[in-house]
Length: 184
Image (cartoon, rainbow, N blue to C red; front, side, top):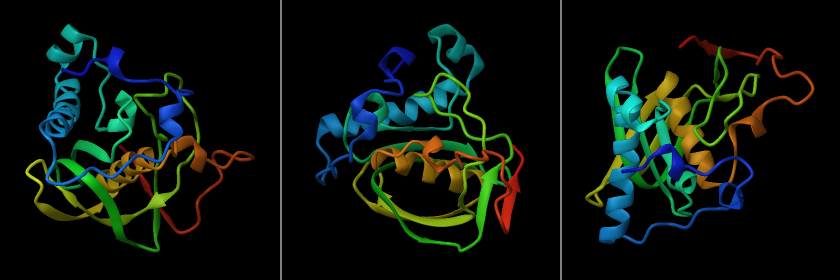
């Protein structure tokens, strides 16, 4: 089971590396890593388990955050209609996106970043992601709102990009033109 001690922090070189593609079919070790990423985000949202193991709540986690430089992510979040979006994917890619942008009104956070970094993070309002599930089967997911933002955040980790890289350095709360504000 992954704990907060396993999650590397901002400044660690692995967080700035381009992660490697996972060879499919996945090895037993890669399956175990992928499943443990999803297990962490699910457990971190359960207050009893989170308290018992000292887990910081999260809605997504990428393999580079546990010092594994491979293209694997897990997301466990409720969508706009309260539907559960729960995926663990190998080699996820954004294959299409909206022109329209979106951002979280409260800003973004990250399990690898201990301090709060204020500012708007411009993202695409809608994305289509293609990847491979734990069984190595191809999946294609259309996302909008918070789930779309979460997937973009985690895929950024696979490319060595941190959420705060997107924040306007001169004016962190500069309004993002034609963007949807998501209040979550």
